Image (cartoon, rainbow, N blue to C red; front, side):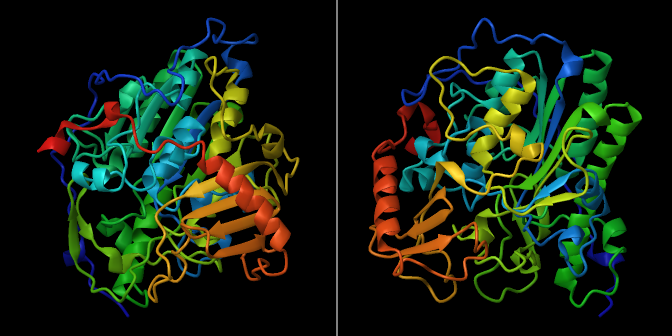
Length: 489
């Protein structure tokens, strides 16, 4: 049915500014080596032109089915469709968690987030303490932007942070992690308005191009996370939706897609398209209310007022579960990569099992950046995969850990798994104590339709042994250097 749009637009807080500030100096964690770049980790032979610029676009709660090129019935994403047409669409990519903070930790570090006791989203300090979590990712940890900085890249982060939280005022700012410039929200300090991400990215691209310097940009978009910050222009694109909730959802995705298009257009205007790798993905699957919810406004301390969870209409295109689940609906998300002349145009890769922990070694190989001594990623470089050599099985296992509820709840039937493992073509899910497991041939059965645990007990036993060995390497609790003073209040 039609809706009157003019009176329904949500206003963004406009008095907020970019949080560019000095970083907080903290002690190093003793679990991983601190970042000391090698003396040889400088720009490699061939100069900046021989290495690609990298723009990594990371959406928030964008489900695999929420693109028009993936068959969504009413969401329109012409700019992402263009990216897929000019690049390769990898349909089997998975992130390292079903929720945002651990997923982002994996991208930043190349490690499974459980290595840092980051199993859920960063919240209030006392809530973090109750969940045996730190209050932020240790800034002394080796990170992707630090490694790229050491290789001569200009580095920037624009958009959502959530490697701490705006509710933790003494947390380190993004610049402490290896960014030359940033504007962010869900961080300490003042919050960048959510719709300004692309404008700042474009300004940084122009600045880096003028300096003839290769650049790396994290463009971590808010959409389609709650609250939904709608703008009339985009609501008016969808006047005849079935419901007001559908209209809100479609409008915020359309707005995000337009901003992505602005970045792609800027690369084109500056003649940088041919030497820029652009990757689009999402931090986890789509959010859904566990029970019917009334459409109403909600308020977020970092981003302001907007529409609440009732407008979360994201889809998984047949995958089990949603956000916060370790089934594919929670972790199998869009992944589109474009690098003209290097990555095939218009191709769909339905086979390659790529993970978010692979991004650090992949980007570092492309940039000629070498990690510090002692650093070992949990992922592997996927450069040859991006260039067309499909990899349908994993030679190095993947592990997940997050809080699962056993026995399954009626309103959350796919949120029971605490652990998951992908080893070769197998995916095993387990509850906390291992009393219930499910096994899938994830290469042949990507939608997890047939549980093979009872048919292949030997495989279950073998992978459970691998899981238990991995669990034995994890810290029992975070290092106290990553605790906020807020914990004692």
